[in-house]
Length: 181
Image (cartoon, rainbow, N blue to C red; front, side, top):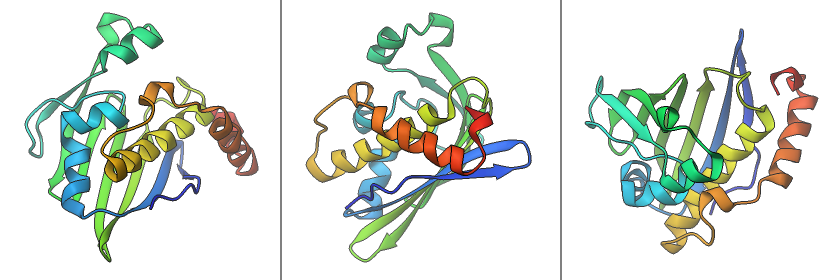
C-alpha cells in the first residue's frame, strides 16, 4: 500500500531537502523494526546503522559490502559518521548521516502506518539531485516491498533508477531547482 507519488523538493534558504510520504499496510511497530534492525536495513538501505539507540549517541553507517564493491567506495569513505537526534520508538527516528539529516515519522493510519520521511541534504553539489531523489524513492519502495512480502525481488543497488531519475529531473526543472543537479 505504498504510493508511487514523487517526493517533494524542499528549500530553506540555501538548504535543499526531500520529503516523501508513504502509507504502509503494517502497524508502526513493524515499520519501526524495519527502520532500525540490520536484518531489514540490508534490504532497503545502502548502509547499516551501528550505535546505541538513544538521543545523542554517536552512530556509524557502514555501507553494505555490495555497495562498497559496486560503487568503488574507498575504505576511508565506507563508513559514515552520524549522531542520533531523536529516538522515540515507534514514532520518531531522526539522525545525521554524514552531512545529511534523515527524519522518519510514523503515525498510525487505520490498520497501517503513515510514514513521512524527510531528508535535508548537507552537500548538494556532491551528487546529482535527480539521482539522490530517485535513490531515496527507490529505498522507500524497497522498504514497502520488504514489509509486504518479507523479501525484495532485487537488492536495492540493482533497482533501475532511470525512469525515476527522469521524473525527478523534470520535477526539479519545473521547480526551478535544476541548478541543484
